[in-house]
Length: 360
Ligand code: NAD
Ligand code: GLY
Image 1 (spheres, protein in one colour):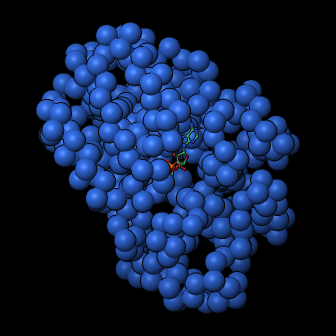
Image 2: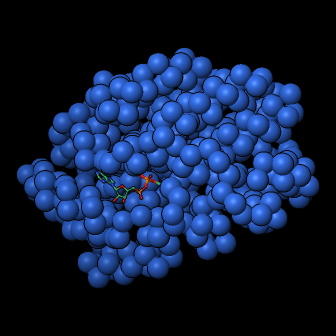
């Protein structure tokens, strides 16, 4: 399947395709981009060990010379230290404006390599080749790039779109179960606030998805990318509706920050955040108890966590105050308005702290 992210209203060459398939001849799709000389592949240790030599051969046989920058696995690579290392390597290899960066890995690699692409030489072309479910369904699409700061998640970054996103589901064969369901959390997010049919599909096909049935994975990736592309086409820079994609993220990002980006994974943290947001929504009479229960059940049944970790309400509120959606001591919260629908509401931190006190 080919999905277009249509940003022609913003700039004439900003639009790009998302390709979703298995066994994609990657070289064939890179060549027409006009890559003249080299590409720099930014990846992580595990992906390099699994697929480094095969992607290198594929590129070489398409006449493209790759060099690799390999970063450690996990969220700790999304830091100023490793961003600086990427700049050093690009300079050392005399990387030029006409060369391309390929982000080859999960969301950590995509976000970091995307931001390096946005900032090195004031912007070089880049391509997303995601290898985790999370990066297939969410982070590779839409141009949010950046790194974490010890005080807050994704605090430094830029909107910078790739030239193409190539999603080959075969990379998921080597993904372990924890990483698979970590990405599944973002699919639940789309269903919960944007698409009731998708949510129903997830409820009815959970076992097939978790066991990596290819057709089911392809279906949820395609549906997620269609939903995300539609939102990004309408609101690339998150001036309005794109914030819906942050459902579960206000508390989720606070949890990740409080754990110093260790122990808990992004999808796990936002799962807890989605359940919290649904309980808030019920409190504000926006959804029924049945909605809260359906969401919590799907999250639990997929093996994701729902319990809020035992930090104090004060610590949560302080971490949330650095959220990008904060304005005048209140936060624009994404709430669920029964399955498949959402509502934005400004909530003040006194109310959020009180509500947290009852749940922790
Ligand atoms: P990740 O990039 O750390 O990858 C998870 C783990 O899977 C790593 O250890 C990696 O080595 C391993 N891995 C990757 N591909 C593999 C494969 N094919 N087989 C086996 N192992 C493989 O984590 P992630 O969950 O992909 O991404 C999380 C990040 O994405 C977070 O930093 C989050 O903030 C970000 N994110 C960004 C956006 C956005 O719009 N830019 C959206 C959602 C999430
Ligand atoms: N993952 C949230 C967004 O891309 O807007």
